[in-house]
Image (cartoon, rainbow, N blue to C red; front, side, top):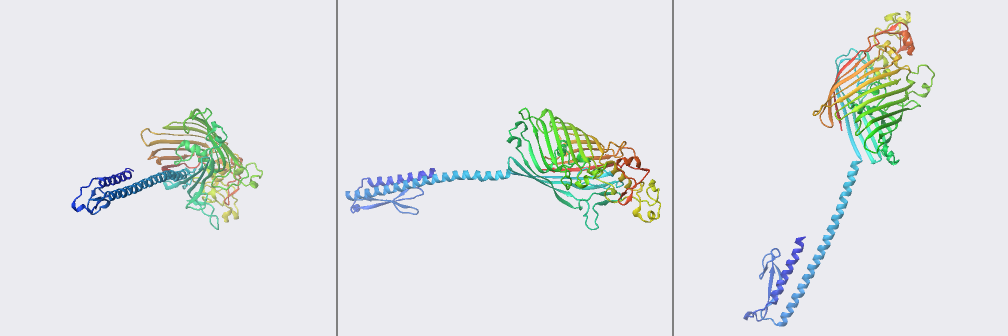
Length: 599
């Protein structure tokens, strides 16, 4: 701006100088009598006036000199004044143009200032509407002792008894969490999961389930490669109570779709080490972390402050879970409530008391579920009750849990990590065709029985066929009652990345049987290393112990739990009398090295 205003001033000075020169008295000489013109030249770069032309100089003006007449001098002055006026007018026009250009530039700058935040704001808003996260769980595990037991985590299987020193590298979970927020009121979540399938297709001669070793089988989920499935897919409304103007319930949500149910994910977050092992009903029962249905949950702030004094959660779901077909006409309900008597400033902080209730049915088609029978088996109702007392501080947390259930633990759930082949259609051991073999009196000493193995019988002293029949009767009768208790917690060592943690669980799969050969304890002890905010590792010992002394149960007792003497299992007859021995499963001991990446 300074440069533009200075140049016209200098030009005006030069013109003024020329005018002064023209008006100066002139001394006449002999050679000037005819008059003459003095030409002045200026260098535009230096603004120095010269009387002779030269490189880079331009004509500035002509001045009459010599013996010019007064009339001619007057005419020359008029011409000079006219030229000065034209020059001044040109300078003024240039100044006006410069002002208009400056105004235009100022307006353009203002418009660009308005446009730039607009497109940046659009991109920022678009970015704020999406969030993508990732979750990876992997492990190396070594079993010094193997047996039939619940799976430590989803998609983990292992060979059963007499396969000691088994080891494996695993990917137990991969999530890609995608969130979309079209408005502040609505959240859309889509979470696919990578999992390793086990089994084979059921077409042609391929079996529906897979035998593993001599005494183990796994339930089929089609094949053994890594597949992709939907884990969570939901629409959530975030401002329910804000819209209804209920401030003490502000923050409550309502959601529908494939949902993390109201209890299992909550317990996992309270524990904090779900990447290592499962807990509670998720470990022993068929209660998955995800169901299809509708639910609402949120905090309770009754005193118009940021302190949370309670939490609520209610849901209605299919009786199946996220990886099963729904067959039942009934639906299940879940409810969880938490009280923080002293208030909580952040999730789980301080003393808390939590209760959970679940009522539903086995996922059975209506025409089968309606058949009148005393022992409903898998079509019976399912009930789960949990009560927890917990305390969480900045560096540590501890929780105790009591559980009660009805038909909430089937034999397939109990043996989800490793099961006898007989449970999934693969007879184990050596079958007998002679009466009385192994105490099995259901085999008739006949020609048909001795020559046709399809008329054979399970030998209680060989394989697990007879034991599978007994275990199934104890758990899958539609009247089994579960009782359990657990204690879990962690302590972060201040100033270090290390956190020791542990969990202890005691379960009676059916407390109506006393003693129950399937009573067991499960305990985990380890230490976690936090590498950074996204990555952590753990070394831990995981153990399942069926703690009753080895025992036999008489067939007459098993009959009270839906056992049918002489009935066929996988084409072979079960013992019709006597006792079934070796009903206490072998223990399992394993060492795990776990890793979690969560972003």
